[in-house]
Length: 218
Length: 230
Image (cartoon, rainbow over all chains, first blue to last red; front, top):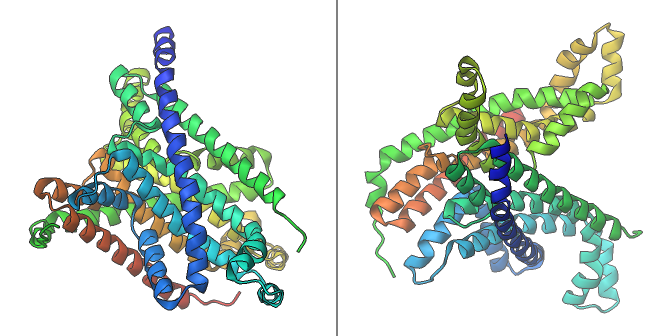
């Protein structure tokens, strides 16, 4: 018992450095995925036909294949065509594209739930497309989009653990390394699990806070 | 650019086919066990009894927020280390699994949380008048669950079950992390053996896409077949 405690204490800083990588990847992916998702969702609804076709294929293919396969595809194929990419970058790109596909679909659904009269009202005020979206439509789509957005964000935090398979030293990679080196398994696995649970609980709180902030009278 | 050589797909035909079959086996076994567990959890959560709904809610909120890959590593690497050190051998033998077994255990426990949410929504969507009708017929709690709630909710939850089944199928790719030779494992082998990375990953990606699509079509056909009035 005492030995186990000492082993844990000795390795906590390694786990913390893994957590830092996990948080950085999560943040990049959630921000990039949200930007892609807003553009993709609006494009899916209002883009010219060729753009809608491309976005539909993008969303359906990324949602229809395993994230892990997409990650390996990016990691192994990009260097073949002359793009140097390391594991960290491959994970960020793969997860962002994947999150972007899911959030596109969320944004598409939420925007199409905004009453048509709002579009007409905006246009009759003389708003062009971009201000109409930015000032009238998207703020009203936000309350509908937020709960599934939070779920996607939590899925992405969990998905950062796939980075382990590209030897990126995230929380799971560090944990597995420590387990293999020290022969102490369960205490580290459970610590890692609790850390993931806490991060996701914080994220879900943040989602609820955003929901309260954006609930206007409509 | 690079030269494409699709003949490697034919050369690795056996690995691909057996990988796909194993992925499907993992999918359906985990789904079946996860659905039974999920149903029990869902009924526990709506039972109104604290000592049932409390632990059920705790289970869902913890397991669902942990990465599936971590659960898999816990059962594959952690369990043997823990069990053979601290438990009697007969008990350790019982809870330690090989690769395929670990995948099925981890996936069942993980997907039980998602399925319990699906079932819970389904149970809550069954109207009170049906339950009243059941009570009027003299059915007990179990009778109502078996003959009224289950058949009525089954139809409402079917589309969500399809989505969960497809997610589970895609997630079986994670099994390659512990060298279970499913489809993604086959792709990795193809790509590292032959360096035909593009062909390997595109082929396997396309297989996942087509099989997901087939599952969706079959389930939609089943949805249409089951149209008892509600």
